[in-house]
Length: 232
Image (cartoon, rainbow, N blue to C red):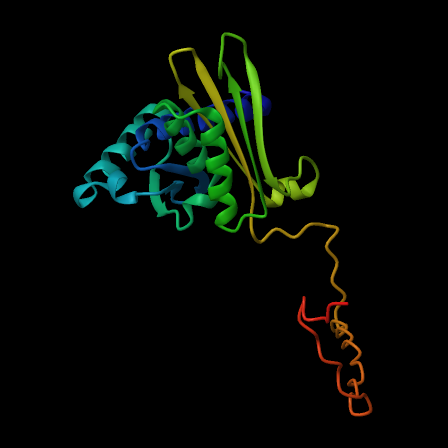
């Protein structure tokens, strides 16, 4: 087998493994997957919102899942590590799954999209974008975008600071694709430059006007009430 075929086969195995783990950890809230090869075997790191559901009582479910992965995908001594997502509102995969779930429960797509964007931005994200594509209102396919904050589409900033998630909402008219992009709160863009050693310039104090001296002015004339004048 050539090196090109090995690379393609390994990529296909990773894609199939991800699809399988997404289905198996749907109740636990699948938030991401990392696969690393170590001298001891293959380490699979699962990021979930509720890891206790995936681990099970005394680790029974995670042991069964490890055996299934080893037989299905022929991995060398797989070791599954489950991590809890501390900030689920900033995880693009989790937010795409939740948005798809709200669409399947009957929410209008505009209401669901705006609600998701507002929740992400309130969690501290610098920007987010939600893309819904499919039969949203009728028989024709359409695409709707909901955006807030700053989003980059190309360059190094996309690989470093943009988190992407995708899920499918299965409705009666058809399948709706849900894409969620989130720019992390710690993102530092190339055009943001800070010069070291230069302190911020203090703001100029407003000029104070001299007080008005009313000592030389005479007493104000009395105000006559209306209608008090003498009749001719």
